[in-house]
Image 1 (cartoon, rainbow, N blue to C red):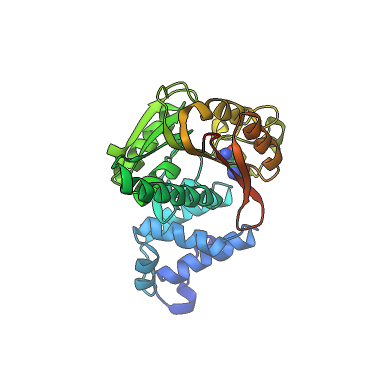
Image 2 (tube, rainbow, N blue to C red):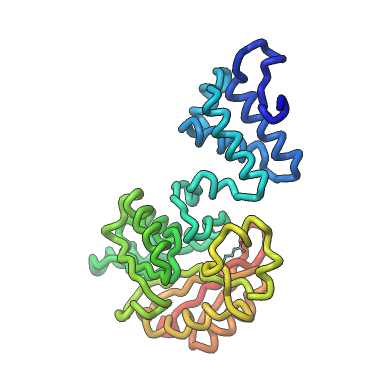
Length: 308
Ligand code: GLN
């Protein structure tokens, strides 16, 4: 089918369309199917098939694209049209300027989660500065539910004197986190452990606890977008009956594992600020704050240890 083929033979007389014409045509098809960011997705798909980043793609914009590569692009286009997120097609997603590899065992990193990491970097950076004046001991954090590892690994890449413990109950997720930590050169500073929340964390005295836990109320899962519902692991989404089950477990064990000046950072759903803050205060945390993301939604709770 000519329209399926995305070619521009008739327009140019070439045997093959150019790379640029080809991906722009794919983008228009995605847009016509009602998908947002069609052009961006098409460019990512084409770049992936050609093994080129955005700059590389610009360089070959006017060159012909081979038929094998057209077929590979069109296969991915069909999957995208069928609702698979582009990050799943590519098996990777950029987060905090770093590429993270993905598998079906991990959530696709979300841009809004960068807020948690940016705050964590700031807190660890301040602690490192303070620490450097007194002792030379590293800042230590623990992340519960590491998934792809995008939070803890971004923190380690940006805070060279930090050491992290990362916990996940999913062996598949831990494997992904291990691969990503190695890719980004921080594996020796990230101690990955299998288990249920605090189960594998016996030690205390942490400076920072972070988590983006599953927080969707079970009854709301059916109402999530198809891309999330069908392609993100349920284990990483399902927050139990009221969506707060993971927070209860995390907050319950957090105070005793932090040092006196430690900080707890939790990503939350847009309507969970009051409930998660209350859980923190009930557990004895002082200075509990709800922080909004760039779109003005409540996105994070920050709580300071009672000792601080
Ligand atoms: N922010 C995710 C979403 O709804 C949910 C992630 C989570 O439960 N931690 O797309």
